[in-house]
Figure: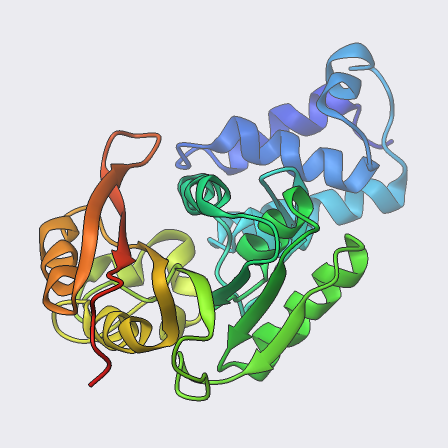
Length: 282
């Protein structure tokens, strides 16, 4: 005889007893198997699983017990107002990154040319597109596999984007963009957190960036100063201890109105700056 929904959740929570998110993990995976909302689990606790559903649920819980991220097990993660497909070739979108979207939307005006660099799953570019259909948006990544996922997400969400495979802004013409937004790699390469939790299953090239974690941000800021139009904006996510260093990089490259913003946990997370109209291309 198969388990009821209530029994399945009780069993799963025992298997995941060492996880700080055991309740949400169990609920998410059972909802994925049943293709239902969480209210179904509360409203029908005595419903029996089919043999196939139980087998699938047991397999998913075992994989989660081994540390595989929930988003990889379900194949997607909610971000902004969208359902974003993810796999081992992309970062899993985090709620804190929605701050990038909010800040970009505050600066966007009709007809602007916007680029999301290191787009990964396309979450940032697609979220901006979902709110603004009157702008040009380029989603760029060096990873062919990441771009493949981003293109699929654009198709699934019916949100058209332009895609380009490239390393940061090397292929872009000077003065060609109004806004650049990016969640680049920013973790120091020897940071022990890279061997813990979900980070173990995400692409290291999208996470780590040199000894101090700032190698990619340095390159991105320098190139953005050349590629942005006068009074264009650069919006960059960073680690919670890197805000002052990133602000200095912006200022050294001639950006003005440099500002720092905190995420939902009140940790420094994003720096923005404007390309000065008086900045001379060198």
